[in-house]
Length: 106
Image (cartoon, rainbow, N blue to C red; front, top):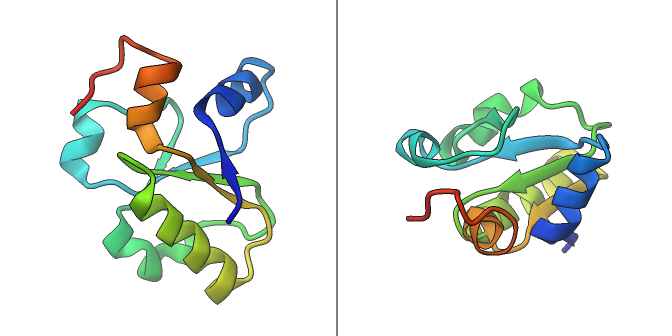
């Protein structure tokens, strides 16, 4: 599976090299913390809303700890032919621990 670490993603965002960020967490989780400019499609809606995503875009999928987002990334690649989908390794929890210690953890 293709993954990107929080520090690698932060470096890219700092360079204005911006993949589409796809947040697959629940609504209540997005109210606690989120990455700026992320598209929010909860995991249980992904099958119904896949057409909102462009298979040609580079997409970084994230969730709380990287498990749900890994499943969504695999689903997009295997079921819909998305070529450039990465999972944020460790999810937002890893982001908060390694990149942004001010981010609320849960």
